[in-house]
Length: 239
Image (tube, rainbow, N blue to C red; front, side, top):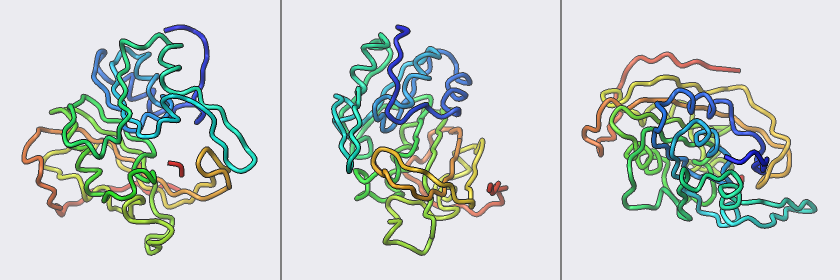
């Protein structure tokens, strides 16, 4: 890829993206759900993988100007970044909402970062979205989801259930007959965000993430909940 630097408007990708990219077998097929302007796409490309990504909002694909209040931000866009980094053979993008597709391909890794709470997906249930993600994972493939939790589980108005998970809700969607849980954490400590594209004012977040590996594609529509003992580590929109 070319050396010219063209950063995402969301700044640097998460460190976990680089770690996941490094851990995969070279040449793996990766899906980035909600690619934005390529925010988490390029760590996987640089590591030698092929990437497909869905993004429903054209501003992040084509580029342009986002104006929020008195602040204006220029977006280079995914298409331009792909060109600058000479990554056309490694990245395929769809100007579509992944969660609304009737059928999609399957992948070695599904990477989901701050997607579940986006307003553009807010009319779909959390169960539907997570099931859709799981169905796209290959046998023995992996899924990584970084998500926002409701700051107050009882506040359905500020934190709609279609967009913000409740405490321990995420793990209930993973049938342990089908999935090995590599890591799962939900943090009770609130995190201050001083503002970003889509939400420029300071606000609080409570976050969680899950990393799981599929055992085998069996009974893909079986979303029953299973009771089990599991160690949960408790740590301290645009969209």
